[in-house]
Image (cartoon, rainbow, N blue to C red; front, top):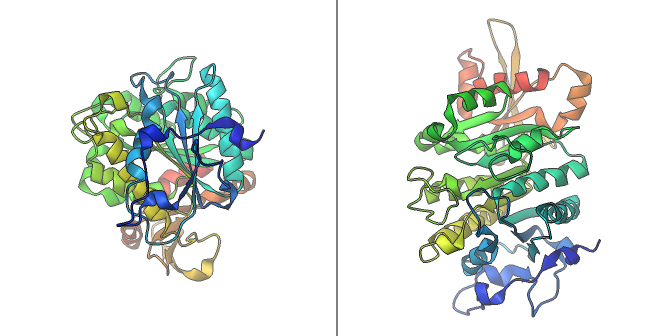
Length: 392
């Protein structure tokens, strides 16, 4: 079906954007679908922005379907990036007769956009939309990593998909196209030690809020490794995000969310960045929508700094360091980018069939600290984690 059939034009009465001459604004760079403007020529765009007006499967966020245009209201007014960047805003996917109808539209739309190598900036809507996002990659036959910025794991039970259990439904898909699920910012008192142990048994990657607060840079390699980065705004503390569907006095600061968004924008691997679970009717003077617009802006700004930076594509632009472990004779290969100074390490896969299936996942983003640990004859924890995933 023609892509435009899935979308409704932006509600300009909510966005209320108009170009102002005193400074260039992001909205000036966006080719948007409105009641006055035709559906854009999105195939020529670097970033495709779209909203999804769906909230019926949100456990605590009914009303978040209205969020996309409220976020746009602030996003369009932010400064234009320093480089020319073609962004196409396709408008909003409206809620279907049933939730599964909305999912179908999301799958079809994302499948078409991703197949043209466009990067998606998705404004939700509810967190369960990660499920049809995953399904779009499944249609394309791509094995992916999903990074969820969330205070919870979304592993609760239930036959019907909702914002608290979508991960369970992704795991149960066969054949499965999820290599790793990465959670950033979980809070133990929300999930419990048993759920933390379950995530470990599933060999998924997690980074607790307290670990991130002390050193946010620990999150950067995990974001860089992700094809999809999905933000439940409830991961941000209530003082910064009063309209979060499931607010809490503790969480990330708004500035930290923006830094994570920038990490995602800079990652050549990340092809979909989504913002979810904000209820405009609960907001205070647009504070949450404004903060989410800032996060979207930082994703776009980070995208402007992409450098086609991935060792498997061009090892000539990387310096290789081979570290010999004295205890077992194992060699770990590290790669340092000569363009960005970022680090990767190579993790072997001993099974030929699995090596072919997971070839995009054997070069693991890491930090200089991981290289230092290897130089001290200590195998980095991240290396062991992915060795077990690839060979388990």
